Image (tube, rainbow, N blue to C red):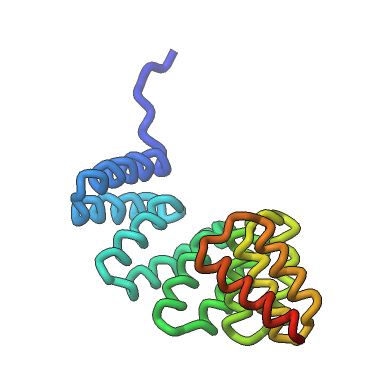
Length: 200
């Protein structure tokens, strides 16, 4: 029987570095954590939690361009890992590049198709860009996956109102209220829209 110790596989080494980094982050040691995360990716560039955490650390320090490049590389390396696209799109939105954000989200849509948060973000981007028909279509998909999220009914209502489908918009706003999950500010907004629609 061969009792020699097997060398660590690359992904195990990367995982070990990632865990050390996570531990250092808990202790507030950002530069040390960053060093171990970079090492994890050097060992195994497909280590998705390490790349996500490093992007978060870079963003926390204001290094958004580097985080952007890191995430773009992540999408190229592991295209099926759709959280990279979500995070990158958020970076783009924060820096006024909505079209780039939308392109990234559309490009990775097939991977995030079963994830309600992914679809809801895509719908919101369509809405921000004035593409209300596309937004409505995606809100329909996301509400099929989770009909109890009031914010998504609200989003649907806004886009329906934008295309002047008053009745369906009113129904969507009503459903948003009925979910019982909206905060006071959103609830007040929805009630205001319902009052306006009643006068249409």
